Length: 217
Image (cartoon, rainbow, N blue to C red; front, side, top):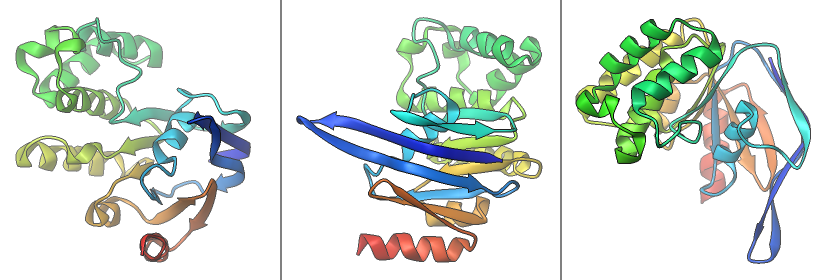
């Protein structure tokens, strides 16, 4: 269960205050994998970061009774001067999982070769995404926050990423941002549409997609 209580977030842009989350009060049902839909710039990635606790709201709070991943695909929680493997070891200690198991899983999964033991400042954006995705998939969370990352890499890596994510979804839920409606339909069974700071929940995924697409017309 994830619950938003009077959640508000805004930014100052060109001297004006832009509200991206406007006094949100909503309880997300447990056991649902949710597509988070909205226009570019609507605040989807911002909301994921607030849910994860990596960004503070202006006021209000997020309440959860389960474990939540960091936003997979966003590497803000990783230190650029540490190697990929060092970052993974640090994460293992933070989340209380076996360090060796997680380091080995990510090393094999992310396919970074020698770069796994080099500072992350030398990584391309794709390499960072592969590392963060692998680290997240190596830890069993109740809810995974996913921001476009299943589209990273070549065809083989995409296929592998979707397979491991599908395996995690057998026992966990997700909140997913993805521009591919095919992937949304593959992994999600309900939807959230974010527009002008407001969120509407749809128990029917097709209805959420239809509302989102109508908004873009």
